[in-house]
Length: 80
Image 1 (cartoon, one colour):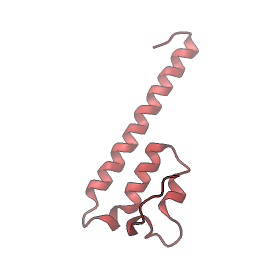
Image 2: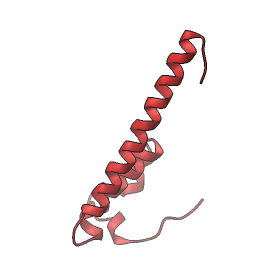
Image 3: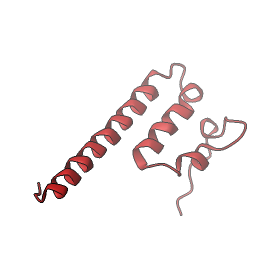
Image 4: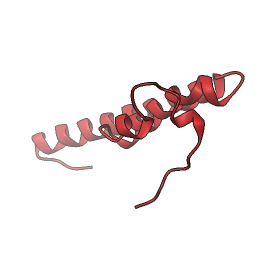
């Protein structure tokens, strides 16, 4: 198993570590949550990490839309 770097911005929360929470979600949502989690601790301004979180949420939305379209086509008996 790969060990995550022991850096403070992943352990700032008083209740849990970031990895304990994000592993319960899809990849893109977990990554977005990690960016949001550490944003205020990692940088003087969190804008870049907030934008990266938005990007990953967008990636997840795109993935879900494609899955939905694929399932709709299957239900109609056609394929992409």
